[in-house]
Image 1: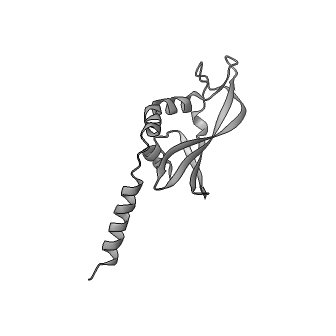
Image 2: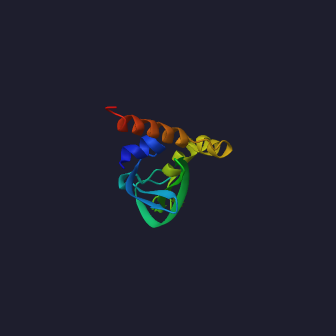
Image 3: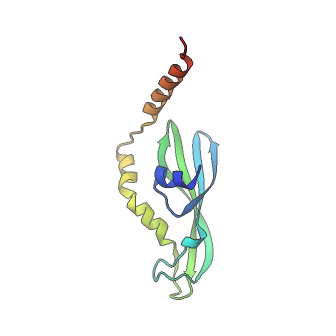
Length: 132
């Protein structure tokens, strides 16, 4: 998976793909923030001191019948200009911009997974029946 799939598939910018793990019927995409995108969420300063990370799991739209999660280490930073210790604002803004769609999925848990399975079966049958 590439960074462009993160953007076009999930609407995530400024992060790099790390790995994919599959276990217990779940798909987990691990990503990490790009190092150049760090700045203070209050004053916008670039002079930061890292104060650790908190790994968060975010549930996204399922792929077929499998639950999909995005695993992300959210970094805590201390700004040396204003002495504020905060989690990064960029991720919060990205999540807030997609909040309507995410919350809408919980109200109407509709997935295109069954339709994709049907289309895949039709294409497989057409490919196997070639020449008959």
